[in-house]
Length: 297
Image 1 (cartoon, helix red, strand yellow):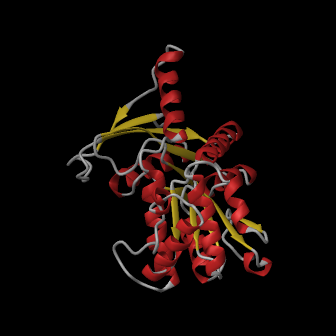
Image 2 (cartoon, helix red, strand yellow):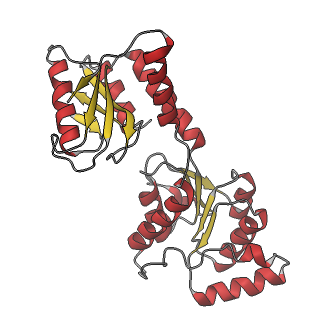
C-alpha cells in the first residue's frame, strides 16, 4: 500500500477528518497529470498535485472544508498570471471527504496500477544491486532483487521483492514480457548466463549488465559462440548507466540506471489512475444527469 493510502487508512482509524484532492483533468502545460492526488488533514498532508500556488490554494481550500466552511466539490484552475504560475494550462481538481468507501476505491485503483506496472528484475544484491533497490523503490515498478546468497537479501526497501535461488537465470523464464533485467551479480559467469537467457527470450524491454567495453567484447564472443543471434546480442546495454556520465560509485550508477530504465519502460505507458479519473468524471457530469459543481479560482 502506498504512503497516501496508508495515511488515509490511518486517519480513518484515528477518527481524523481528511480531504482527498485529485487532478481530474489536465489541459495544456500543467505541473501534474490526471490522477495525481494529495491527502489533507487538519495537521498535515501527503502526496502532491504539483506544488506552487496551485497546491498552496488547494491545500487552503481543503483546510477550510475541514474547518466546517462550505467548499466546492470541484474547481477549475487556470494556471496563468492570476495564480502566479507560468504553466499556462488548466487543471480540474476534485475535493472529496475521506470515508471507508473512498479508501477502498483508492486501494483498488492502486492495486490495478501495480498490476500493469512494469517489472524490473535486478540480479545481484551487492553494493550496486542494493543501491538499485533504493533508487527503484519509489518508482512505479514491481522491483525484484535476485541473489543466490540468502544473507544479501535482507534490509532492502519496503515493497521490493526478493528471490533467493541457486539458479538466478531461471527467474528470467518467469518474468513478464516487457520486463527489464538489470544484471550486476558477483560473478561474470553468472552475469553471462542471465544475460544470455534474457536476450534469447527476445521480449525484454531492457537488458543491461554492469561492466566495461572489455566485458562486452567477451560476452559477445561467448554468446555468439553459443548460438545467440547477433541481433539479440546487440540489444544488450553494457555498460549500464554510462551514456551521459561515467562514474563508478554505486549510488551514482544506480541513479543513472534507474533513469535509463524509467525512460525505457514508462514512455507512452497507460495509466490506470488517469483512466479511472476520466471515467468517474464523465459519469458524474453526464451518466446520472447531474453536473459537478465548479468554481473558478
